[in-house]
Length: 267
Image (tube, rainbow, N blue to C red; front, side):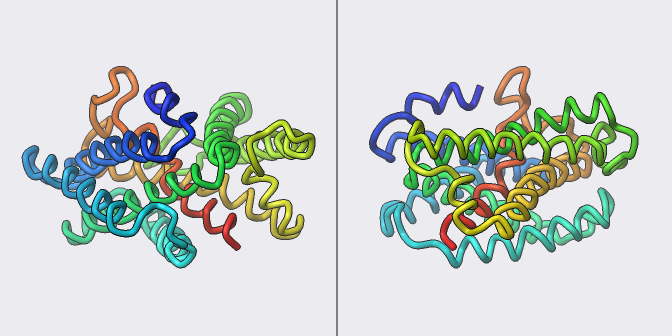
């Protein structure tokens, strides 16, 4: 459903419509994050609007094409230890964080994901679509692989349906996707080099671990949001998308993957 909303702007030659529409979704994500972390409805709305206002100001003052390589590296240095800490401590551990720190950490990572999304589109439609399809393939292959082969639970207290077999199935699915996309890129059938081609240009010794890492982080993004929702006692981040939950429910896996993909693309 989100893709249907973004599709016309996604294919528009100029970046501004896509950046503006995706910024509206980020405002909604900020509102949801504030609610998940205990803010009242009015304060949550102001938080979402404030997040959008800050990013809009950054856009107006600095533009959208700044070199943000240091930000992508910083995001990686935050996401990896943060996710490890959260998943090791589980649902009770998240509630022990100071409320303000939880709020601002999440808003900062959401903001970083929006900047990465816009810059990924600036690198080319093919590049952005390859990042999106990596996440979708990891999710789909993990689901069906887990259903067929799942035995060992990945994080039973956070997301009981996920299994290690599902994760490995997701990695296998992404590997097949990457091989197919590399072939299309080589034949010139895509709009610019994809994430997979950019990774492969770094050499297989880096490309393969990077691809597995990105796939694993897509699972981590899903788990982290599930953990926060369980801590808040909520099934969905909101009901903005009837039948699909909220914006965060749709983009949770993308939050870590987008800046990490940009980090690899700008090496």
